[in-house]
Length: 217
Image (spheres, helix red, strand yellow):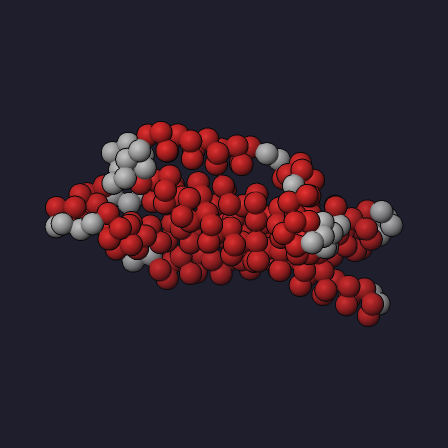
């Protein structure tokens, strides 16, 4: 393999990492509050509000229902508004983030649902305020489940980032399509797939170690 191709693959790997972790970080920052809101507004929870929960749940479900490849194209005007272009790595971060936010919200909600209700009731009996229950009971107890959800999100974003390469998003998916598929070079195709598989394995293994370290139950 030529030095030029090695440099191209290294550059594509860096772009994939930017797309995966950049969009993952923003999606977690926005998806976590949504997940908390979904959980605490449910019937029987500390901020019960059926109408709000129904509306928010519907919006999140709609966001999760749109196939990523359609979302990628449909929000091009929004992408241009945010980053000034619809092509390139940072342009791909926008639809990746939009797709990941409702995904993260449901994963965070699921992690919070695993917290035993008895802990919340005990905190209420001791006079804890609702915000204190969120920060001192719900979030610490759900932390391992939340970390696991973040790992699932990052792995999903690796797959989505490869799809973003189909519309000029850059990264390993772009290299695989342009050189592996369009130029009929099976070696490049195989190398990009192997790199993506290794990247997913590294994220999964590192994440599982972190979850095991944080899980003190």
